[in-house]
Image (tube, rainbow, N blue to C red):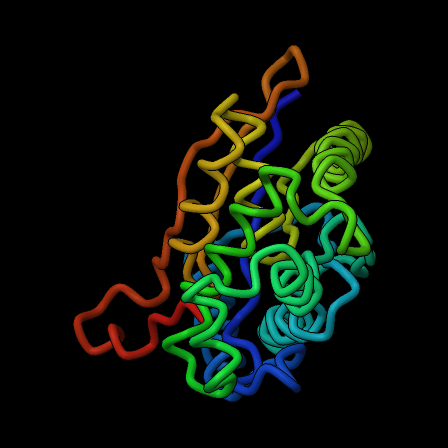
Length: 237
């Protein structure tokens, strides 16, 4: 059984913390460019799925629209809750409860629309979450999140057995980085650095071996945005 899994982080989302779960115009362009690259290289997918979040579904829908326009429609997509991102707002509220004086948190609370504060605050919240400090204050304690990623790995194995072809899955940075961390056997803290490095519409690929183990093949690839003029299309948030 030879299967390649193509995990894609959604395109750039909304640019206000109150309306983050949407696909921005730039995020749509990133998704269109990715689809165009795949079409130019004769890439096909035996199955496709996304999480239930708007930004994930719109990214996949944009890719599917491009394939359909080119006369190469993809299979009907599935919605997998295992691909949903963690709740950043819930993690921030949890951090307020356990460490209200955290400098990165204070900077975010004082200027919540300033995107320069989003990543430092997210890093602080993720580290606290991974250490178990937020478990009593968030809807999804970290052990439950890890179990969800384990379920995702198994569900993807089942999908691979059913389709025997490339799988496209659109998710978010937290899920993709945790999937990578578990497959690599890396420390939990490594997922934070992987998460914060993953760009919008970036591709992470895995191969499935005969023993049912996922092996990382590529990380944070942007083959659709690789010209010098495309650098202004690289985004993290």
